[in-house]
Image (cartoon, rainbow, N blue to C red; front, top):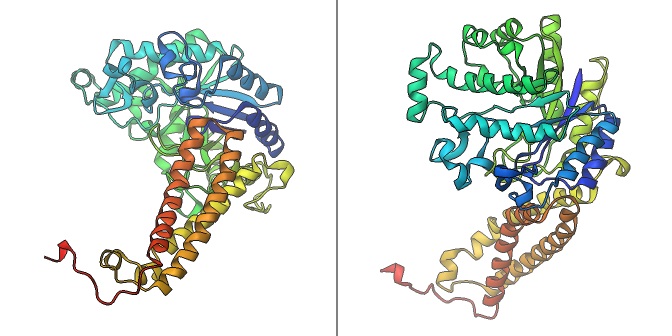
Length: 466
């Protein structure tokens, strides 16, 4: 089976030189391909230019046409199958947020979903797919996304179309997918088209058969749960067996442990891959798995914050690939949060992030801990009812934390730009370092200012006391 590693480039897109290091490394760990999910880092041209990297829509200056083509070729040259992913109905915030494309939203309140009833909607995604395929004339696979279409049948046009169809709301999604894939097949008959399967799960089997999905796509059934929570209903496999000659599994090596997590717990992700191995065995020859896509999410959607940077998650990816590659279930795959230096691209950044996770926890415990709450709480500060001896201890401890956080921030300001662009660097620091540093610095300042005041005799009255 294929083992395809997913790069989610809509969050902290990786510089080309760094991606080259990772591509070489994952090949040695057992990967057979890479899936590039570009979003606003693709160099769209023409009417689409404003949504992509040529207009620097993502703010990181990545990627140019030459860089995009180079990454696809580089993967190929290193024995990995390069696959591109272009979202084609859901997760289209990066397109539909722009005023020029606002009218193509399914609901005006959210830029997430394309309205499939607008005549121009299909033309937009066709143009996006065309430009991606034009950069990869030798493509064997192409992924059209199509997951998490949160808004269906909201606008009047969609409601009227659904009411006229035998298949009701399902027809809106399926007709859009059918027409798009037929267009792709006409352009590239030999191409295998992949899509996420979640929107198919609740659609009746007779409806899916009517749209001949099995002749058009190979679905990727994704489940990112650890072993104890992993479950796929047997009815789903029964339906898919009747529909699809081949299917894919979708696992996770990062980005599935919480929408704002910094660390990638190796055991949790290894557990997900062990669960998939158990599922393959359970399905046996009834289901023909073409491969596994090991997803590595950087954001939960276009507007979500960054999570689990790739350098931090490389130990997880290494272990997960080894789980999938092992020939025998009895083989033990050791899981560790670290890698040998020679195998760990971005090790310095990863170690900084691990240090930050510990330091932030210390800062939170200090700011909200017993000492501050007992001797320097807001009520005491408002009424000048404090003891300098206790404030001296708080000021000292806050000063130490502030110094450590400032030092780590300076190191991160050096390490992050080596891997990603200026927007992602600024965003990550402002989200993960600045709030903790500001809280500790404010505490240090206030405690230090009050040190020279005498111990309070009695609490001063304030205007809030009536």
